[in-house]
Length: 251
Image (cartoon, rainbow, N blue to C red):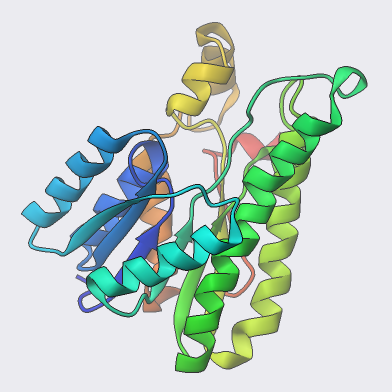
């Protein structure tokens, strides 16, 4: 168990990739605080599963587009389980599909706030604590859309996730000398609510069939990479955006 004695904060830990990562981090030995917005019952179920593994766990409701709330979340997390060593900034969403020609500025700004600004704010809150301690691992959440432009009507999402990828690289250069490692994950088609909401079964099947792995990804496929990046096995990685897409990004 490579993360014994470590403490992790996971954004969006109630479902999908966040849930799988919360559980995988706990299985690797870490205590975990997770955030949620609307899935209270699911969040508390994840907390119960983590505690059943013998680890400490807590769930915090939070809207991370607010700087004061990002600070409060970090303070509450450290009050609950101690100094945070690992941040998984599992943040983002498509909101809705919309062509650029018809896109209102409010939707563009909402996507940037949700995906990019929230990532910036929680990373900033983390660094205020991690840099003075001279240690820590931050993992951001990008997307295959950041590299291939995404599907129809997702330019706002793709642009914001590309910005997250660039922010990750910049941050790795900025804070690496202090002892804080920053990397990211970039999932492709993963079987989560995101694709239940914004994709169709026929399109998902077509994508899976042209993926070299010939399947959709599972949340655990991403969670395994998150645990690796959080561990000392990734000690010499900085600014990497790990593609977790079964080879879909090769086309």
